[in-house]
Image (tube, rainbow, N blue to C red; front, side, top):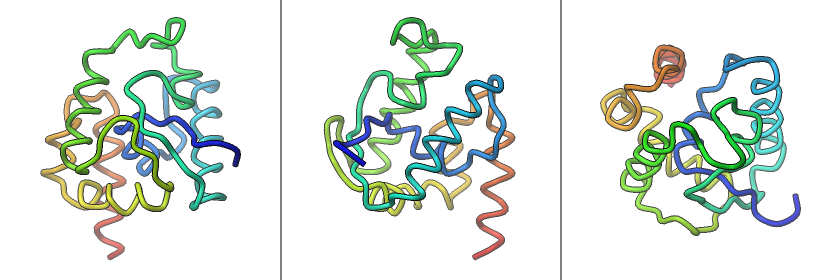
Length: 135
């Protein structure tokens, strides 16, 4: 992996719960590629960004690098930054970010506080229960 991968803070949760569902085939294949890259390179660096990242690249809400749901995405990012104790621009490895995000991943109340109004909430809630049951 060359250079840190720009990543919106809330995408740390999206990537953890992603199971091949999304806005369409192009988005799903793009999201899967990012997820696979991070799984294959857990020590690869990510840089937290407040704008469009690699996950956004194939999203139908991405209009020239600007999210059509910018207010909601920014709100999710701010809540994740607060929950994670991190800041925009911070660079860390994917495995470090995953470990930090684990507190939200494992807590239904914490996850709901971040993104319960997301259209994919039911998918994430189902995955969260599977993760919690496997522990």
